[in-house]
Every structure is written in structure tokens, then in C-alpha cells.
Length: 248
View (tube, rainbow, N blue to C red):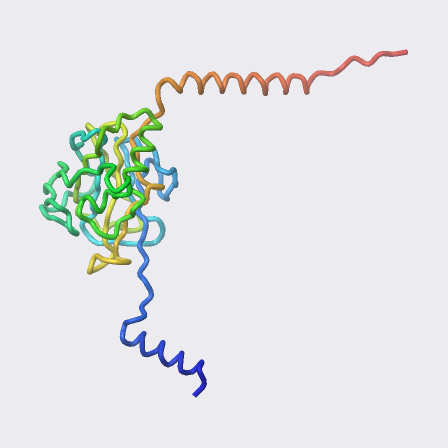
């Protein structure tokens, strides 16, 4: 028997025994405002009164969908409002440290800090495995600090469970009493067990952020726009001018 045939036979046996399985694919869940596909804002600036949560691509999950909110400076939990969906019952879903409230109030799941050189991620801190590790202290604190948000020493993590099997169409939620600089991310399972490729989560590139530009930068931005407008206006005017032609 040739070496090639031996290798093919070995691979066939391994596949039959489940020892050479193709790793599962974890789907991406985006959080944004006014969109039906992931904007990739790195992260996406959101309006807390109108938030869309959906899958990137043709994916589906199981109920419940978890929403995790990270509040800077160890702030308090915002209040969730649902549109067309209900809160899931009380439960420590998918490994959460504490059971969700069964309503629209958030339950504290832990504090994201600069420990482990800032590489600890919000999902792991909350007790959820297989989430996206880009939702870490370094990314959150760095983004907020760049936008003039006082981060303090930790982001308080709060969990909310929604009784919905997220599908191809995004759902709409909103938050009241949410602090500036908070991050909104999601976690779901595509099947059972909720491990490996069955875990769906939000990467930092498509997380929702309530940070806003520093007020001091707005006048400078406006001044820059005026200057650019004046420059282009002058150029357009000069293009339209006709030089007199001297007649000899």
C-alpha cells in the first residue's frame, strides 16, 4: 500500500473516531444604533435610547440572549427596556457568577480591572467562557480615556437576560441611567452544549459605547470645518475668474 493511501486511511479512521474534528465557528454579535449589519466602528458609538443587537451574517442562537454592560468608575447598573421581547427568568445562564434578575434590572457579575496586564476580558470576569478576549481592560480603558471619560480602577459588569432566540433580524433595546463611557456587549449560544464553536459574542470592533467626544474638541472641529470651507470656497471662486485679455 502506498504512503498516500495509508495517510488517507488514517485520516478516515480519526474522523470516524471524532479525534480530528474541524473546530466550530463562533458567530459575531454586533451592538449599534440605526443599523442592521455590523458597522465595525471599533467600537460603535451608540444612542442609549435606541440600540440594535444582531448577528453578523445568517446565524441564529438559543434563548436567552445575554447583554453585559460594563460601567466605568465602578458605576451603578442601568435599567434595560425591551421592545417586543421579555426578560428571561432568573438564572445563572451559561456560567454567570450570579443569577440574572428575571426583570430589567442588571445583576453585578464582577469587576474588570487592569489585572493580568489589562488582558482580562469582560466575558471571563463575568463567568462566561469562549467570549471574545478583545473586550478587555486595555481596549475599554484606552478608548474611554481618549474620549475624556474618567475610568477609575474598574468597570462594573452587569448582566441582563432576554427571552429571545436571536436570528437574522436584530432586536431593539434601550438603557436609561447609563453612564457615559459604558460598553454594551452580547453573549449567546448557537446550540448545546454552549462551548467551543457554539459560543457567539461581541468583539471590541462591534461593541456599543456611550462615550462622546470631549466638549472642548467640538469648537476646534467646527473651526476646522469653517477653515476648510473657506479654502474650498476661495479655490472655487478663483477657478471661476476670467483674466482680462489685453488687445495689442
